[in-house]
Amino acid sequence: MAARVELLTVGDELLRGDTANGNATWLGWRLTEAGAEVTRSTVVPDDLDVIAGALGEALRRADAVIMTGGLGPTSDDMTREALAGAAGVSLHRDPGVERRLRERAAERHVPLRPDALRMADVPDGATLLPNPAGSAPGLRLSLPGGVVYALPGVPSEMRAIAEASVLPELAGAVVSACVLRTATIWESVVADRLAPVEAMPGVKLAYYASPGEVRVRIEARGADRLAAAQEAARELLGSSLYGAGEVTLDRVVHGLLAERDATVAVAESLTGGLLGGRLTAMPGSSATFAGGVIAYATPLKHALLGVPEELLAAHGAVHPDVAVAMAWGVRERLGASYGLAVTGVAGPEPQDGHPVGTVHVAVADSGGAVATCSPALPVPADGERARAMVREMTVVHALDLLRRVMLGLAGSDPWPGWAEDREEPG
Image (cartoon, rainbow, N blue to C red; front, side, top):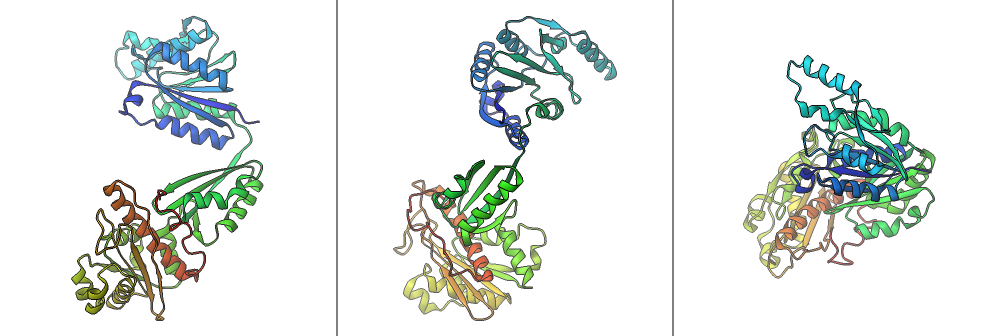
């Protein structure tokens, strides 16, 4: 059975937001990877009573508590005192630690400040955990309810002690994990589809949503169980699944273009260059990205891309036929294999009677085929947030449409969920 571990990070600077709590993030990742179960993470100030109280509460819930911070030489470093108080013991000065502190100061040719010797104070009954990266040693103390590990707050020192002395003791059954990536599908829809996977014994899923995309982390006890869960998840997600691990949607698109010895050119209206920026973020993208045209003003859609004036006069700039004409125009003018175009209303105000979130995307290829999508994108109440979200999701929809076209999936399971509830966040 996996050890239940709570994290207790100490420091006013963490509560004020002056310092990010990177220690808890790293420990959560490494403990999970080692097979321990992290059940809670708490941040407390440099207050002796609060630290002691939080430690006592944690020990009533967990098998082990890992504390970080408060082992330095200054008056606000109180972890040693809190640990001694929780155990009902006194502090003693360890001669070996004191000797190393004096030797370290001598090697650096600096005087040893008297308060620095506080780092040699150890609760009775505690085991010293060597610190190969710094001065203050870590501490291990068994208490009623569980074991406590106290580690320095300096990240390099904390990690060195944790790797050498803590993780080997808490390691359990190895947890295998993978991340699957989906595009243009609601987080709730992803969760509904993967309900059978969540029901598999020894499997745990976590969902991470961003505008237009959802990442699914699958954890399982053992590689065989993970492989079975991953296979089932891939089948259930269908064509909405575009990749795994750290592979981003733009990299998938570039890979498909490279396989076909093809290029893409983009015509952008509401995204104002975001689509081209996403397609040029990857090193080497010049091999498959021909270029782009930002035809933001309506007249430029005719002047630069050849969109018929009568089409613009009849329907305005926000229309599926305009997106198609833009895709044709940019493909021909830039000599690309594919033309990818987006037009729509990012907000915060409606345009030509079209509500914010109205978007049209089109792909034109050299064979004369055209594919389009017109997702109804969600619109948060905050106008500025709505504008940013619509633009970001439009980029995802455009890249995903091109991916589907190249894979012959443009007509399969297209963008389920986006039109079901415009209020759900993307």
